[in-house]
Length: 110
Image 1 (cartoon, rainbow, N blue to C red):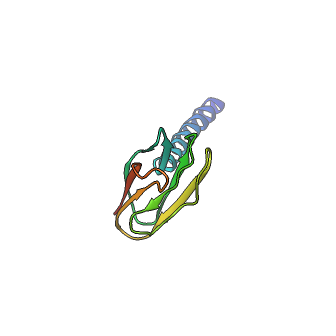
Image 2 (image 1 turned 90 degrees about the vertical axis):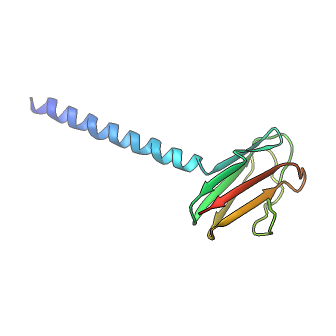
Image 3 (image 1 turned 180 degrees about the vertical axis):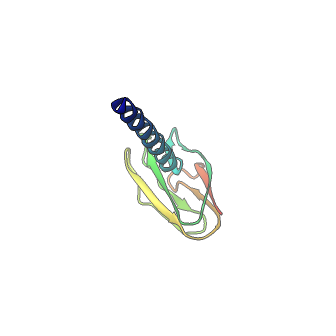
């Protein structure tokens, strides 16, 4: 009987840890912007002050991430490369790719 209670308790703990790990993974990927098909996806996100955003180039073409107000600027990102920036001030940050100016996005920091 004691071993059955121990096994059930262990399973409850493991399920709780698994759910927490899945939530943490979800939080990390929600601040990721994928560059693919000459688009930023998602094109708009809302984050809290102090949050980092990571852009990942999954396109065959090189791209950049340049804020319209010159707050941040990435180097040229080839396929598989990424760029991160931490937003420490509230505001609306419009950005684009300097190589392909029709590619545009926005970060809203609250």
